[in-house]
Image 1 (spheres, rainbow, N blue to C red):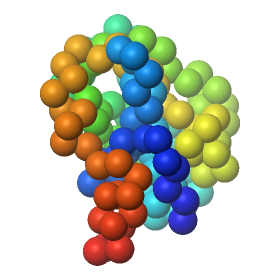
Image 2: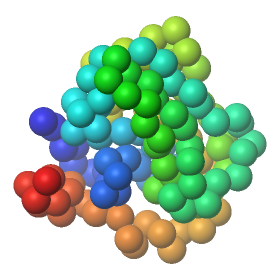
Image 3: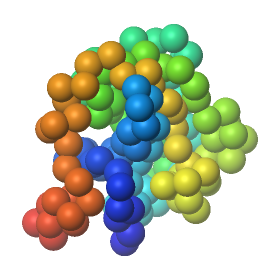
Length: 127
């Protein structure tokens, strides 16, 4: 199971890549592994305002459906439309082509509550 350096993680297995005032959001390798073969992704609408830990997306797999929560407060600036026809990108490249959406960060305070890669790896060992 891979944990990518340079990202911030939640205990719900979402990741955020923060660049300036934008956060790219996705699910971790652990999350996609637990879900199994992903068959559908419901993404938020561009322009939607999200608070910290509010439902961002729904990911459906051959095993279950899972909510994905926003690790930061922000406004949806862009979604990964490729997931509409290729949801398997979440399994194949969860830290790259399998990103879910980009948020314009509206409140940076929550970033301090997220784990860096080292802390997330330590957290995974407790599961």
